[in-house]
Image (cartoon, rainbow, N blue to C red):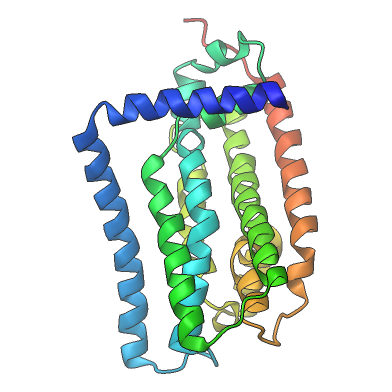
Length: 263
């Protein structure tokens, strides 16, 4: 663990140096990312200008949910760059050969060879929005609430990572440039809104098939002290463990199935 932690520090430091070598490019990417986040909040404002109450959720509650969802998403987006383009870069171009030649676990290398640094603004923005909404709603944060929020954020990021790692592993078996990651990535937006606004099928899909609801909605319900879906957050560790285990198994199977390009 110590060796891998030190390697992670070196990976992050080295990539940060490379990224900041072109400061203009970095700040443009940061501005683009922040603009996309603001547009998301703009949609919520427009929505509540037309509908003052959404299935029993007030504006501040929905804003709190949206803000919370950004925190684990920001951590995930920072690490997901190589997962998004894994099929094209590592499989089709054969760069996975280089990964296998090193005495470090292949998944560790793929995750930490590149970082989307500008995505950290999502995490910071989410924290600020949660603080603002908590103040507006007079939410009291005790020590247990803070610790629970930290744990649920970490588990939420793990769920995002595990879900997309499962989808990425498909690239080992079906060599396709696009893969199945982009379509599912677009479904992340569904987890930013109350689960109760969707039909039963979507609720089941977001809870048990693609568990984005466990990464954002159920933790938010607990932190807001709402009664509906109140006990689901206790399943968060089990869901994270199950999908993480499944992701690792599929990655190992895919790695065994991988055949070099021969170039």
